[in-house]
Length: 340
Ligand code: FES
Ligand SMILES: [Fe+2]
Image (cartoon, rainbow, N blue to C red; front, side, top):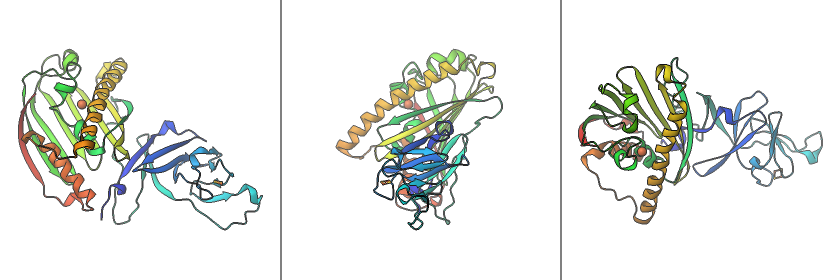
């Protein structure tokens, strides 16, 4: 049986967790506490003291040990209680261990996995072109009042862009787009064909010669999307979003804006950050509104042929929710046309 909890989720950016600091985190409604042990390795414990269930994140970290703020029990990175102050220097109580979780630090993110099953092998997503020569990355964090699937679908949804992001991302331009959409082993890929315009205010910079734009959108189960644009074969822009389920209807999204604009990499940073955040702010509002509607009326959605991308993503999510491996779904390829 596969489950959402068999996958890896970001809990923090590496720089957020300095020596002797801790971070209280939520994931799937669970409370976790994150800190670095005496060797600097990131560790995750259930955020609950074994003694009287005070949140350990209310305590403090000292020399890589986490101390509860109530009676001072001390935990090491493996979750073992190594000191009970009221027992003096010789601990009498026999060995006790808090619940711990697997942690991997990769691409300057700290990932956790709640379930550890030897028969299900999963790995954290590798952030595309992160620290690759010629590329620079801007990282953003935003909280959405919606679930992971609706967030991920929004991040690879083109038809909303002219309505939710007029001017700053796209202008309604009566452009017809054609795309090939494939579903294969828990992965959905959309390849757009013959896209030329529609970058609103930034067309003059991103695509001054009006060349064909290379554009793919991808979904990787259960929570990652990537959007790639290539302009005139020189400039490359990647938006990678990892959607972290804090609660059923609350999702923390880590967004990497990674790009190669040659000599403009450095100077364009502030404008790309501002522009990216402005687009995300608009999506936060519409996704909050969508969730209000779902809470009232449920998810009895209607579909048009252009929604095949959503259909494929939802088919993958449904398999995971029902404990089946989406990799076993048959491969599918569709061609779609739509106007933007
Ligand atoms: S509740 Fe944590 S030490 Fe007592
Ligand atoms: Fe959007």
